[in-house]
Image (cartoon, helix red, strand yellow):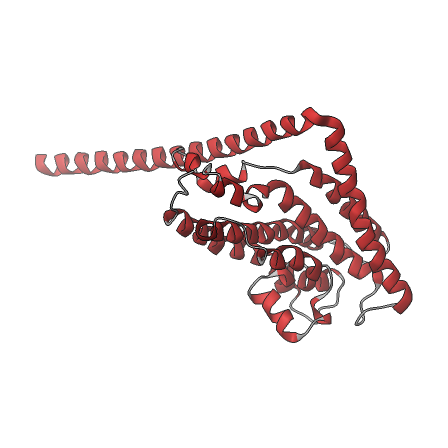
Length: 296
């Protein structure tokens, strides 16, 4: 009887220790994440204050970023004024696609600029300093550069978005609002993933490759239009490989009630952006493990 009680007490104590350890591990994990988020916002605050030191330059660049995209949008407007429609798409339908992609790219350029300018870190040997710090290299690279002047372009895209929505007969529901938000957020993830892949190549090439601009600038301009206006291979590539179509064309059809059933699947398509950035992170970590210092 005594042995049974001892065994029961020991078993109970062991269970309590296990629960305490698991609870402690979960608390540490949560605390670590909060520290990372706090560090990211510190990076954000420092860079914002730094760029505002030259206020005139900052505002001139921001206004420039606001007005320059209007020239591209003006070209879109005059094209539709001349031809009326494009493969069955009206001006305001394409303008909605134009605005969503423009907003996603502007946010990605603002908050993921560190990856876009990563070649300077490798070429100057500054990446070596990031490796000896007890923090994620991806987070440190993200925090190494912000481009707040891109908010000018973001504001321009927001105006186009509002104009398009006011002129489209869209019956808005909660799922459609969520879909629109997902289109923008997941579009940011796709552009960030491309910046990350281009940055990873710098571990071997040192300098950035212009070919990456085909997928960033080229992908941005291509995704501003519905994918069904392009050749089939282009549509397939930018749906299943670089999933721009999943954050612009396919959910756009859901917003405009152009789908023939399966609306839920079209609504969830933007989540392909999450699935895209995960392997990009794996490729990035692979590059970090195989990095060799430039010796600078």
